[in-house]
Image 1 (tube, rainbow over the protein chains, first blue to last red):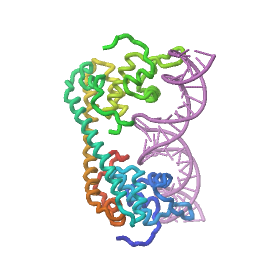
Image 2 (cartoon, chains in turn purple, yellow, cyan, red):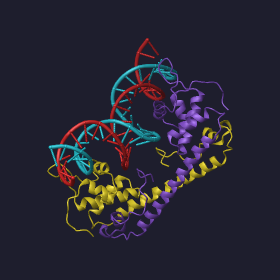
Image 3 (cartoon, each protein chain N blue to C red):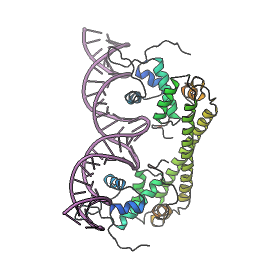
Image 4 (tube, rainbow over the protein chains, first blue to last red):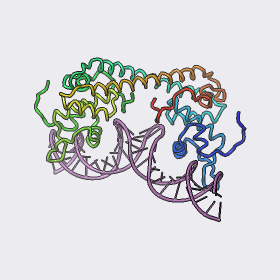
Length: 152
Length: 152
DNA sequence: GTAGGACCTGTAGCGGCTAGAGGTGCAAGC
DNA sequence: GCTTGCACCTCTAGCCGCTACAGGTCCTAC
């Protein structure tokens, strides 16, 4: 609802308006997620409203946990409003699935940790269930190993 | 239940027995999480049962999502069985709290994403709720920004 | 004696930033 | 006009917890 004019924003303006750190905006540019803006004579970045919108989009998608690859794909889609939105929907659904599986894994973890701390008798380390559970070899069944990284 | 002898294990033995990649074991050593084992004449690592136990402990704690700093602290505690286990308990409880807050945040995320994909009319991108929600500026309230990183 | 594994070191990359050093531009106040 | 001081600039390195590769050495089995 502001003026539609393409007033030149500084990088600091973008940072303030989107709650992003200046360094991060520059990083998105190096990264290719944000397009390089024109510069002033003095070499400073001069952004337009379109840049501001794009950054807001990126930050919002990131807050929703979309990986940057997905964010770039969504941005690409949003640049072409005549395409069917099935692709955007698929990205979102896939991400939702990923979030749900993370929740499930974390809940299994939570249960295991809760059992562990409940069993702690507050005695000495030598008799501590927390330590024993961690040291216990025969615990392979608890959590599926996954492909790499803890994932959580 | 194997022999208690300190038979020399190769790094590959440790990897097989704990389901860890060889590179990761070497990485734990550089990192200081695993102590450097003695070497054979040919310069290869020769591990003892104690090393194997320690690695199993580390991997188990990591599977439970403890950060390596916590793992090192827990290992340090377990080396001294006469100390009270309150510290171990505190680490575990704190981690449990962290896991619970991650679950809560992910569940908020899940709800938001579910709303988003439910609203998708499978039309064109120009009218897509998924894209609109992401582009929507007035969405600041949804998720607290946190200190850094998406955290999820 | 030779083939092929298991092992060695060192380095660089992932994702998604964050933080610093060391320098330049620019606007406001005196 | 000159200074102060902030905002901006580039470049580099660090975070976590690995993973992977390159290019070499050792050891064992045939």
